[in-house]
Length: 301
Image (cartoon, rainbow, N blue to C red; front, side, top):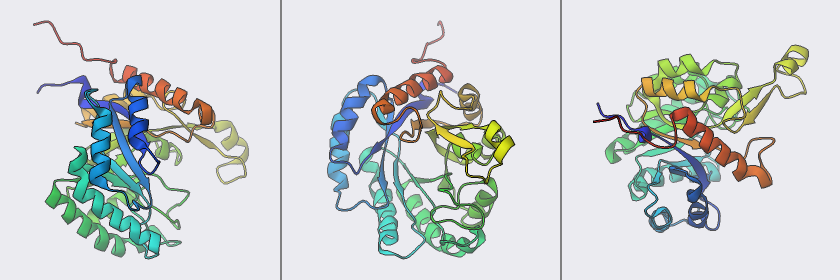
């Protein structure tokens, strides 16, 4: 089997709802990003996806970068107006992913608000059963982000796909090969879960990876615990957190993962605001080093 360094690309997320996402892409690609994930928050609005795809293709040009995936983050299981817009957004992105040259659409599963995870399963089965069939027909894979959004097993507002016990229930409820995970170690460290064994068990279900890390503040835990007023974990840009990304990427390769690690910015308590892109470019170069370097080196003939 032929292997390439670019079997795993290192890229970043791009806010598709801003005034000029293609202009943003054009400005950041010279730093060396190899992929982008355009994403929407809750609604697509009146965006013309055909036009947006063309603008992004033009911005990418001959750089060699790709659109790794599309994403929409909201709650498609509930019934308020904005929840229904999220569901419609999922349908539109699945139908139009090919315009961007990708076959992955990602986001939150949604959940029945304020209820334990099990009580979301009937609605999950209904909504995601239909979306999985739609994705299968279009040759698209759906990747569930593993962020709890401050929820837990007993209650929450956004997402049930944030821990392995929930994944077991979800993939049993809708046993489709089109459903998988948009995984990152950050959200597992928030639960004090070791992410490495998780890759070994769930590697075949990891379709897309977010480049986000965390720092667990063990001194805070020892003094205040995990339910006190002092935050016991900080979300970090890769290269500034606790994860050994060289090992993470090695385990992803051993699990057969190919695709992209797209940096999820806007969370680091230090490298944010004026330092946002500084932190992201540092993460880009760090992750490339952990991958094996910035470029493929062929063996001697």
